Length: 358
Image (cartoon, rainbow, N blue to C red):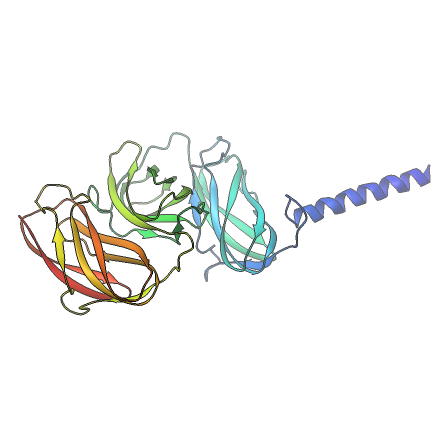
């Protein structure tokens, strides 16, 4: 009998050991274990981070409830990143780091909040920790009152994070950050309809009034390279604005080296096409052409500031060095008649041109 008890004990120990090994390795299969540390600020907060979803008391978390954190990976391999459980909710992510350096990963939420409060969760990975705060709210919390900066015309103060490459599926690092002005606290939900194979979405809770930053997560696979113009809006369309971003060709050099011809003064060889009429939205026929001096081939983006409700943008791939013509497309709707000065920036240089709307 003692013999069988000993065998049973060893079997239990072996099972526990195996479970622990699985917890510290990637659960999808055998691979080496990664090393690194969570990125955090001076106060210990996870940086940068993104919280998505609504956390309502008594409501079980779903796929819309996730957080994104950044890991500085020193050795590629499998990872398990997880939080503690606070107020009935927790987060966890497993996968494989394919490369070293800063990597953004997504942790999926579980459980359900029991109280309406600010929850401070501790995220753990490879001996490092960082903290992230999440508001859980009453199920009857109303929608927030807010306006997107630049609404109803072009968005202002937005940031496109990391590169968008044709044919490459987006990751947790592909986000868009927008500025909003909150008039009354509450819940929010923002989305960008599918354009060229990509959508953006985000939801959450504004706890205070005033200027706030909202981060939307990107999903999908960009179909074609080029400039994308899209609208971000609430589901009720009570506020929306337009923004642009560039999808670069697959396999291209990411950064061309160039300056604007005429940098510091008037853009060289400036010309326009199309009719620029106040109150009439710009389309593909409204363009401006300027020269760039290319010293290193690769992907480029050239854009103007927004003047009189109009912005000029261009992107592409310089395949040769020398002086190259760049055609920028106008977006927006001119607000007034008159002559206005646009500043065009490409590389690290800027030139200007005057355009008359009549």
